[in-house]
Every structure is written in C-alpha cells, then in structure tokens.
Figure 1 (cartoon, rainbow over the protein chains, first blue to last red):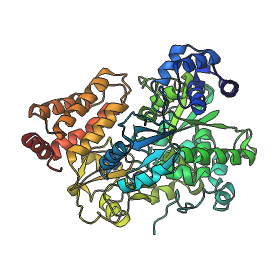
Figure 2: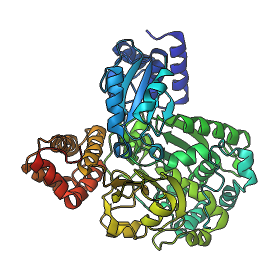
Figure 3: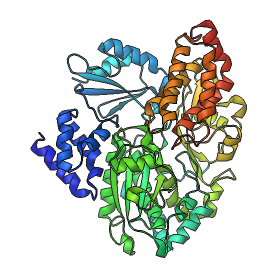
Figure 4: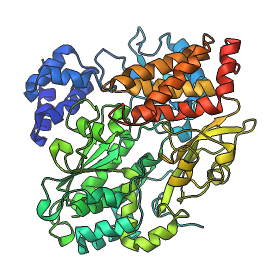
Length: 154
Length: 426
C-alpha cells in the first residue's frame, strides 16, 4: 500500500529509534505529506512497516489534531479560535470564511481547494486575530483581507 | 535602561542570530564555565540564582534538577526534554526565543543537560511552529559542526546529542507527563505522579522537562553569576528577567523582557501603549488561559509569583490577555471553556465529562437560552474541579481558574444574559 518513498522514509525513522512506537507520529506525518491524509489502509500499512499493533497506530492517529483521518482540501486553513483572537475579532473572521467558502469548521469546499479547521492558540497573539494556511501564518486579519489572501492559494 | 540578556541580540525583522554572531556577543561562555564546574556546582549556582520555571508552574529549576539520582545512584540513560509545546492560549514568548536566538537555547540545553548528566536531549516543538523548527534544525547542525554538540564537547569528557521532535498537535502535549507519552509515540495522556519524571520519565528513565524560556536563562546565569542574576529581578521570590506579553485591544500588543516583578500596569501602559481608542481595560488574565482574572485594582501589584497568587491568580506564562469593556465577558469565557473542553484528553472522567458540560452551559447562556439554575451548574464544577486531586493533571483545575473568577467578577453580566435571554453586547 505504501509507495517506495514512504517506505524508505519510514524505515529511516525506524532506524533512528530504539523503540519502534516512538516513530508512529512521524510515520503518520510521512504518509500525510505524501497523500494529504491518513486512510485506514495506511494505518495498517504503517503498523506493518513499524512492526507495531495497528490499534496502537490508530490510537495515535485519532488523538492528534494535525493528523487527518479524512481527506482534506489542497490547502488547510487553521483558524485560531482561542481567547486572544476571540477578543480581537475571531467571530467575524469565522463568519466571513464560512460564508465565502460555503463550509463550516470541519468542512472541505466542493472543489477540493480548502478545508477549514479551528486551531488552538497559534502563539501569534501579538498579531491577533490570526490563522495559518498550510505552513504560513497570517496575522492582524480583518474580514476584508481574507478574500485577497485566499486568492493566493490555487 | 534595564538589562535584557535573553533578548539583547534579537533585532526585529532580522534573520536568527547565527553561531558566529552569537559567539561574537559572548555566546557559549556560560557553557565553558559550566563544563569547568562539577554538575553539582552548576546545580547550586542555579538554585542560588532563584531561577523558577517559566512554563507556567514556577518550580525552582535547581531544585527540579536535584531530584535526579546522581553519582553512584545515577541510572543512565538520563534524558533532558525541552518543552517547546507553546500552546497556552495568549502565550507567544517561546516562539520569539526559538525563532530569533536558537543558540541561546542550545547553550541552555547543554548547561541543563550537563547539570543532570543527561545523555540525550529532545526538543519537543509544537507542530505549527514551522519557522522555529527550521531555525532549530539549522542551529543544531551549526553547533554540531563547531563541536558544541556531540562527543567530548569543548574538549571535555561530556557529550550530548540533541534531537528535534515536532508534535502532531494537542494542548495536552505541554503537560509534562503527557509530553513524555507523546515522545514515546502514544496518546498524550497524563501519568500519575509519583513517580516523578526525574526518577522515572521517558521510557522509564530519569528525565527532566524544562521550558524553553527557562533554559534560555541558564547561559547568562553561568556566564555572569547568580548574584548578578538575582540583581536583575525586582522581586524577592525569584531572580532574573521575565518575558512578559500583552494581547487584546491594546495599542501595541507584543512581548518584552523586563525585570521580574514589574507591575502589570507598567507593562500595559509603557510597553503595550495602553488601550486602543474607545476601549477600556476591564480585567486581565495575567498568564494565559488557565489563570484567574485580575481586576484594575490588582494591576499595580508586581507581576511575580507570590503577589499574583495573593491576588487569587497565578503568574502562569506571564503573557497577559486583556478583556476590554466592549467585549462580552461571557463570550470570552465561552472561548476559554470551549478550548479546555476540546483539549481535554479524556483520560479522567471529571475532566472529560465536566468541561463539555461547562462549555455547553455557557453556550446556552451566550445564545440567550440560559436558566438561573445554570449558575449553580457552573459553581458546582468550580467546587468539584478547581482543586487538584480529582484528575491526573492540571488541565481541569486550570480551566476552572478563569471560570471561578468570572463567576465572582462578572456574575452580574452572566445574570443579565439569563434575565434578558440574549447577549447584551450584540
């Protein structure tokens, strides 16, 4: 099920660990980097590659919020909904994004472009309200700026 | 002008401090001095400096180290784990240190690791800190190439390997024992204490977990001595400077390194520039989401461990969040409680079941469907969960801290929501 690159990367992770289970989170990330998300088949394949129980891999995969157990869009929007953003305009941003994209938290646009998710404080409170798209942080946001920012993501 | 050793080399908008620049500014002098001392002498120096943990709990760093069995009692491998899982809402201080001056952190890691005779160090970074991860990866490579990491560091008999681990999410990873489970590739559920990690931590081996900011203090303590470090502080209950922050509707939100014990008002006015036009400060959370509110009458108190505690709260991470008069306190409280309910790992029943109940109750009140009995439900949760003991970790007690304050300070606002069956701020 795993392709050659994924297998190589997971073998390399395993080589660095004394305990195979320590490689589980990173192995999940390897698959997610290649496929965007982690399917049940991938969970089994990772377990097989690491020589650990599939239930162990699944318990980790379903616990951590940056591991996606469902398909996501080409770009993932992580909108901070924690307290500093809550007092500086999060609600307006969320309403604008949900209207503009036609989805709510947890949803993916029908064209597969964006998935919208809430995220715990991004540590950018000096630039609140903030969000992260893929690996890029955007701060000091106003609803008016959102459309322009989203246009940069195809 | 006060000294600010942790941030002196940081220039806003510039690339991170390189190894060359760090050395030119006197970097790795603290490590040289530490390596010339015995591990016990390094511990003593840091204990005398009254450095207290900057991750939120404020435990004296030297005392934390001293619990690790040493000498003939030592059980190797010993691990140092760096808590860089900065996820406490309102907190943005470790990010600055990680992204701007990575060698300061590496030097701090080396000193802490030497003090406990650690064989390996892990830097645990939250998954969203991509820039910090790149910066640390580069610095580790630089330091290894220059002989500051690896075998026989600076010609001594001491060696250390440092590994970077980037997290896959969840607030629970910032909890000491949850973090250890996460590093082992398990769910980040808390462990029962005792045994404490210093005795049985990562893979059952002796382990110390230190916060990023805490470690960044060490090079300066070792290079300049504990007396100098004590002199940086304005407070009697701890040495050094502290990275304070302010977020909310202030003119200039940010992070500043100031003497430990400056007043909240100084930080709010002199650093954060006061409130934005049309906003008044109603209350602040002094150190993240899991600290109780302080009111205007408390703001002249020193922001140190004991004074904030006497005012009914905790210094926490030292990064304040301001509630202004134009924001609905119930809406703010709802954001806090939704966060804690979502981030509960589910390990302990009172936390797993109680926190969502609190969040749902506040949702109903904010949406205009609250009932007067809801106040009792909220009071009951505070009574049941605020004191440690019913749950393995401090997440639920932390969640109750701002709830307890809000039920006291903003009770009228909550009652108004229920009586009018709407949010008066909308």
